[in-house]
Image (cartoon, rainbow, N blue to C red; front, side):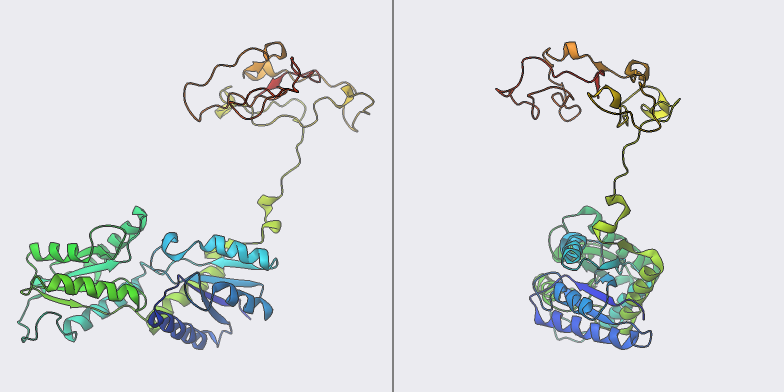
Length: 396
């Protein structure tokens, strides 16, 4: 049996959007039943079922590896929520849980085709908002589209919506006057700004095309802004298309993201205790005859990247030589590495403050007793002089 599919929604207070999300989850259950693979879904915030409840239900049924697909047209983490952070909390609750995170849904060619279908429906069937007069014949060259996204505080996410507008214009509406981009919130232009631009370009008909998955509060805000603009521009034929919605075409895209993540194309996440990066390699001394690399191409620039963990075990009182090591190893000559060396005799000298912020840490020297973070005064219990060092100068 294949791993279950977990659909992640951003959550909404609108019951219409919650209901459509539930219908879409049911559609995918019917589609994936023959694989076989279970399908569940949950919201990050603001709606039920919560994502944690859906994951707990899957784990209780014996699933410890799942494929999570965010139902999002963009990669906006601010809008959808912190999915990696939320999943990390679920891994703390369920230590055996592993998941693969699929890519967002857009801009997929099949998503653009669904937008073209919604545009065709609006051009043929949607009634006009402003007037009940019979529509005049308007040529495609006099028709414009305003593609409306959610809007984000992240410029890269807003640029994604602009890219979709351009792709849609060139692949599915090349005969139209223009395809402009607008946003519901967080950035400009808003829906009225997009409509005004189309009017100034000479459009007689403008179709507002929501770049939104499901109906709900966002769609209502798009329509409200379009109506408010149309009330002051009666000569402009303004129509609004429907959202992409629960449909087979959208299910095809989600199943493709599921299969892609299942094949290793998603972002994999194992529990932190079992990640290779969480296990640090033990420190080892440099092999005989080798020197640590210093800066690019070993030219002496920068800091020493590593120091032998066992510098001089035989100099400690009562310590036995480590097996396989010489009884009296030669001290490490740091001067030969081409880096600055702090002499223990000079540690008591006043250290000048750096001229630039954040480039060096003036008070983080190794071997200075009684010093804390940069800028702290020496502690009262600190000795006047430096601590004795085991036969080697401190280096940074």
